[in-house]
Structure formats: C-alpha cells, structure tokens
Length: 114
Length: 116
Image (tube, rainbow over all chains, first blue to last red; front, side):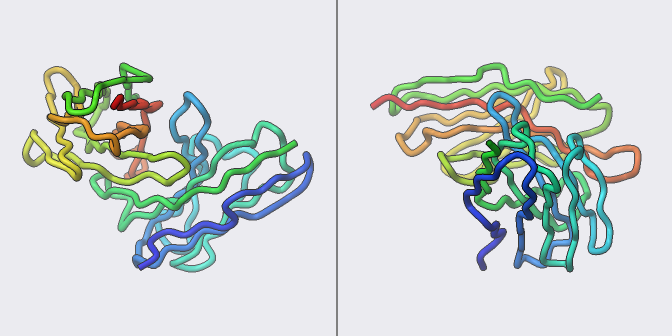
C-alpha cells in the first residue's frame, strides 16, 4: 500500500497563476482532508470531504476550491495564487469523520508563490 | 471552544535521558487525543491516540502519554531519548462539531532536539 500520495512535491508559482494539487489514497477511506502548515501555526484545515460526493469548508478556505473526484482522489485548486498561500500543503484521509479515527497524512507539497 | 496548547515550542534533551512534551487541551465534549510526529521534510505519522479507554496510552517507538481529565492534559513521555527521536511533535484534539462531524485542532508543535 502506498497510503496517501500527493503530487507535486514542490511547486513555484507566480502571483495570479493557478494550479491543482493532487491527492490519492489507497486505504478505502471515506474521509479526506486538506491542510496547510505554516511556521508557528500548526496545521490548519482548508477543506474536507466526509464522504464521496460531499465537501465542506474548514478553518481557512478562502482562495481555495476542492473536488472529491471519486473515493480515492481529492484535489485542491488555487485559482489565483497569492504570496500568502506560500505554505506546505498536506492531504490526509481517515476511515470516517467520527472523532476517534486517526488521520493518515501524505508527504506534503511545498508551494512557493512569488 | 476547542483548543490545544503545547507548552514548549522547543525541548532539548541529551541522548539517553527522559523526554517530556507537554500538552493541555480544552473541549466541550469528551475528546479523542492524538500525538503525531513529523520528521524533517516528511508527513505526519501517528504516535499514539486516546479514545476514552485506558488513560495511559502506549505508542510506537517507546512513547506513551497519560490522559488526565482533571488537569486537561495529555503529556507525551519517553524514558530514554534516542537520536532518531529528533523531530517535531504535534498534539491534536478531536471532538464533534455541531454538524456531527469530526473537528480536529492541532497544537503549534514542539521541536525536540536530542544532543549526543
């Protein structure tokens, strides 16, 4: 099992450019999540998908959109990148959104917006 | 409101000495609590979790944590630090939001340095 995979690993964008971060999991999990990690701020939830066909906003959704393509895949799109979106992005999955299920994380995408 | 406080942003220990990483939480519900570890340029890996069973939880790599409801704490310990333990550690609280979905809050992390 590969677990949770993310592409790309690194990306540099100019302000105003768009891009999509891809995430896939092979654990047959129902729920998937996108986080951003910034120094001194821990991880903050951008969007999540409790199950295939549903998506909901997290703590910091502005400037992002998501698509739950199927049960395996959950993508994050930046329509018009801004320097404030420079961050490390992590995708995660879990069996369920019930509170005691742990999340499994991908290796991250390091994004720089200039 | 749910919150997590990791009391130390950096902890430095000598190899072979005990590790203590402190975490306090607040939650209006009976939460689940987790510790994750992140090695440099890697994703997060689950160390251990508490889900209302035994209050002393054992995890991987010799780590354990004790849930103390009266103190709203979930400190992470290890009897003897190893060089490979140098990483960043995140305390996480999870309960349910008003819609019945999991609400997860991460602490800001504690960087553990292990000195040879």
